[in-house]
Every structure is written in structure tokens, then in C-alpha cells.
Image (cartoon, rainbow, N blue to C red):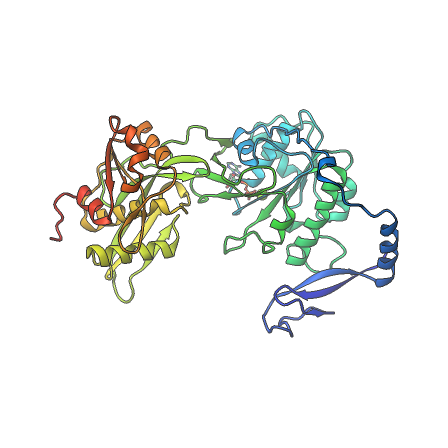
Length: 459
Ligand SMILES: Nc1ncnc2c1ncn2[C@@H]1O[C@H](COP(=O)(O)OP(=O)(O)O)[C@@H](O)[C@H]1O
Ligand SMILES: [Mg+2]
């Protein structure tokens, strides 16, 4: 076997160095050098010559065999949905998320379910076997066949895998390969370990579930290197304190990335929530000023989400802008539109904004509801609880049409809302709901504000 050597390569400019340096001599950036394995030159040549004998030839597309994936259910319907209809054998699935969000809990449940019919190995690099057992008892899982291993060295893990078809690695940041000298969890280690796991998965047809931690900035640690290697990347969203978590697919080679799963975290385990209508609404909706409900399309599902705002007089200096669940820049932009186009002065107001239940709203269709919530907070007049609002807002103050308008109005009807304010451009597609709900098409933000608050106090 070729002796492995390692070098340090800058992840920004590719400069190589025999030892680790704090600052890259090539581009001058700090902390970008990552350890990589290099094999000595001689054996590589030998490998090349060998390969040329049995080299692969191109094949016409018509002769390529189609592989059908017999998917396996994970035992949790919501997870199956996010995976695109079940687990694909031989795939690598990465589950990312903040600490304590429920990654280990979810994978323990999946392993326990799978271990009833197949051989499953749970490699717990972070917790001891007895801790995993305690969790299994707490979750009341039937897991007598589940194999546990408390190991951090990847080479030992590889040896321990016998004929298991499912292996859980909890977590990739805690395992290391002895070929690199850097510490477990460093970018080089994470990349090398993930690459090795990929070779094992594809070579031996093993399905891997890999837990990945998230950095402070919210990215999966080992910047992007993990995502390239994985077949499926799932990511847990939601505040740790909230009971509801959203599992979203960021990348999926075997299914859509449009799907999301909604989970509820309890002391007895994590449950898929099939009836998610109303979990992102507060009980006192409609009583206090500053909140507005919008039908938001998140991963092929339409959910009614309440957006709450709080305005407080700025004590001194610059006013604060603090959105949770909505992009900061978007919030600043919508405040500017309200200031300029409708004359609502926010320059001396601290603005706090929160999407209920810890959900993240990324789509432009929530703009109008954010404006409505801000206007309601500013005027100190509540929006009645039977009104929903959706639409995109342009910088000119115009309300632009959005996708899935029909689905959104349908959700409002289903949830018992009596009035919906939406972009005039979408009127045609939702006209059929006329007798079920009061339709209020608007072209400008001004119109919406006038409809919500018939006698504006600013005039
Ligand atoms: N003994 C316990 N009783 C009740 N809830 C617990 C207990 N231990 C852990 N939990 C809950 O389970 C949650 C998920 O934990 P875990 O699955 O280990 O998270 P992760 O692996 O994502 O870091 C924790 O946030 C905690 O609230
Ligand atoms: Mg864990």
C-alpha cells in the first residue's frame, strides 16, 4: 500500500504548502489552508497502467440499463416525503441542524424502525452506547436488534461494518481518519471522511445517514464540501425552543427539493405532523395590533403563517431592525417602501418582526403581509382575525402577482378566513372562490392599507 502523505492546500487560491500556515502565502487570506492526502508518485503510475487495460468504453444511451430504486420506508411518513418517497438504498443522506434540534432523536427512531426488518448499525461518535440506549427507552422504541458502536476512528468503523445495509454516523464532525493529522471536525477531516464514506456506500451498497453540525453562521460545517458528496442533504429548521421543526431538502438526487416535513418535538420523541394547518397562528390573533396572516407556500405545502411586528421608539442613534424568519434586507426594503410611498415614518422606530412558530419565509409573496403587519403596528390598529394577505411588493409600491395564488386562496377558504387581500394580477385565477370568501384585489400597497384601515389617521 502506498504510504500516505499530506499537504496543506489553500481552499481559496489552491496554493500548496508542506506544513500548516495561518496565512496563505498565495492569496494572503487567513485560516484557509486545509489538509489533503497525497499519495507518493510511483504507485500512481502503476495504477494508471492497470486501469488502461480494463478501461471503460463509452456506451450508447439505448444500451444503458435503467436502475429502478426500490425505496424503503423510514417508518416516518414526513421523512419519506422529504426524501422523495422513501430511502434509496446505497445513498448518502446528510441531516444538518442546530444542536439539540432532534437529529439524533429522528435517526434513532428511523434506525429502530429499520432494525425490525434489516441489519442496522448506529455509530455514535458523540454519545456512549448507554446514552443511546437511554434515549431508546425514553422514546419507547423496540430496538433490541439495533447494533450500536461507540467509535470515532473511520478506519475502525469501516472494519466494524459487516453486512449491515443501513449505517448511521452521528456525527461526521466527531469522526476522524488516521491518514490526516488535523483534528476531527476540521474541514480537511470532514471532507476526507465524507469521501471515504461515499466510497464505502457506493462500493458496498450501504445506505448512510450522516449527522452534520451547523456553524454559527448557519452553514453546514466543512463549507459546502459535504454537500457535493452527499446524494441528499436535509436540513432541520426551527428555533430550539419551539416545538415545531421543519425538515427541508436542500439537495436531492432522487427527488424534489420542494418538499418539507413538519415535525413536533416532545419528550416521548419526534412526530411527523400531518395536520399542520394553524400551527403557525397564535391564539390571540386579531386582538393586538401589528400582526397579519399570510398563506405561505413552503415546499409544496400552503400554510397559514402569522407575521408579528413590534414597534418601539428608538432611544438614541440608529433605529434597530430585527427580523426573525424573514430576510433582513427584505424587511429594510419594505420599511423604505412604506416610508416613501405611504409616508409612515419609521426612522425613529425600532422594528422587531417575527414569523410565528420559528418558520423561515423566503418567498416574495409574504411582502404584502409584512407591509400590512408593519402598518397595523404603526397605526396601532389590529387587523381583524378573518383577513389574510399575500402578494409581492415592488419598490414603486405596486403589488405584483405571485405563483400558486389559487392554492393560497383555497387554503384561506379551508381555514375559515372571510377576506383575502391579494394582487389584482391574480384575480382571474381565483375568481371562482368569489362566493366562498371576500376577494379584495389590490394594485398598490396604498390600496391595501386603505382597505384594512378605512379611515387612515395620517390624513
Ligand atoms: N431526557 C430527556 N427528556 C426529554 N427531552 C429530552 C431528553 N433528552 C433530550 N431531550 C430533547 O430532545 C431534543 C433533541 O435532542 P437530540 O436529538 O439529541 O438533538 P441533536 O442530535 O440534534 O443535537 C433536545 O433538544 C431535548 O429537548
Ligand atoms: Mg445528537
